[in-house]
Amino acid sequence: MTSTQIWLAIFGMTFVTALTRAMFLIGGERTVLPARVQKMLRYAPAAALAAVVVPDVLTTSDGLSFAPSNHELYATLAGLGWFLWRRTMLGTIVTGMVVFTLMRVFL
Image 1 (cartoon, one colour):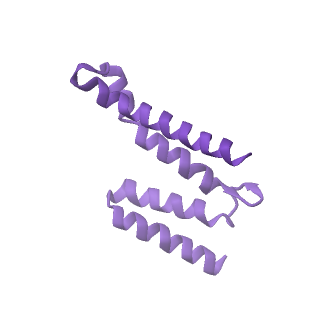
Image 2 (spheres, helix red, strand yellow):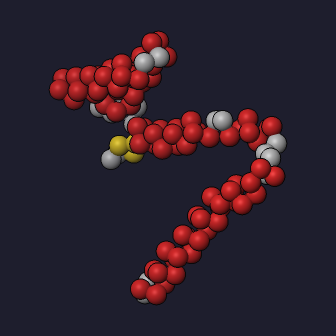
């Protein structure tokens, strides 16, 4: 790509991003999302987090892996288990890191 094409792409992406984010501000209070859309948007952060975390946890340099050598997967599952049991963020982080570290040291 030439430098002109790169700059056009940067400005184009900036414009599209600003426009899509400003739509809710431009409409103001007149824009009311239907109740169904509002309900669906409540799940957007969890869906985005899953879309980022799950592929990173499941894949290794060899591809998709459920083997014990995939320490990230089992640390994530341990952290998830702790969170579902106790509902504490600090405990979730500590549990995941302890399991990850122990698996790296001993496996």
